[in-house]
Length: 365
Image (cartoon, rainbow, N blue to C red; front, side):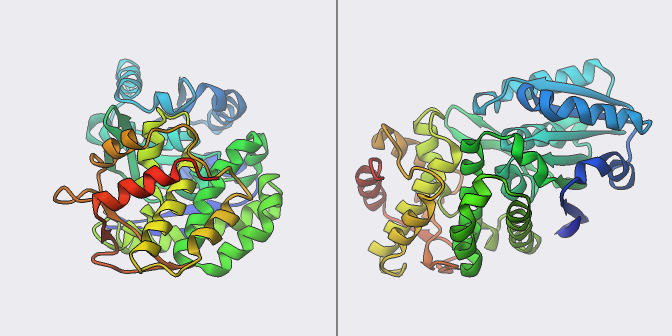
């Protein structure tokens, strides 16, 4: 197992990456997040695969733990689910000496993280990601939250975990399509920070889609290292951390406009391609970058927004949390592996250009 440290304003926490890491979870809980009681939160699908076995292991180590589940899927990442989970914990008598253990994909790490951030004004959190998306991105960095009718992740909190345990061996239990969705975030890390990593992902994509152990562990570890460097430098997204939003400004708008029929990875893939198009039109991004991204991403997912309505996507874009003074701000590349610093690592983009690019791009691929 390899450990990556993430700095926060209150200290630091480890992200442990490696095969069979889950076998050591109970020991690591006692070491990094000692608590009187543990609330293990998972969706109903992951609970059957991993939640119940982990509960047995935790209890077998003499720790007091209870399992709480919610219906799988983005539709459950809501204030209603948050309310149900927190009420169940309160009714069961959990106190401030408790710890929340999130076991699952990105929906679970966000939702359970928000439960931990707000339960009795905040209790310790441990993230146990079980998907590429969660291992590579969602579990690292301390962002938690839920979706609302106006868009994705508009209600939430920064709440860094005490520990993240990423065991790539569990990726074999995922459907291939879900692995593909998560790999988009890995390509994003390469696109903004590491051209060599981007190229390695291109060559290894078949092995990664098959969750081949060595390829999967190497990709998860490199993405965690890259993200850890960024969030350690800017925990609360005041500046540099905004580069991690590449592809997400337009991607989140498309995802919400599809009413979450479009997978997160597919939405971000289209968002990256369209934001590269914006950059090329503004003379910031090197010509050909959009096509290079398209060619690479299509090795994993279909780079298409399908039947999403561009006008509806624009409406969601106007409520994006990255809007400043009524103007959208977008992360733009100089080229593969390098972000243009712009003004605070983003560029103000005219609404007319964004609308035009969305209208022309919703049927790409």
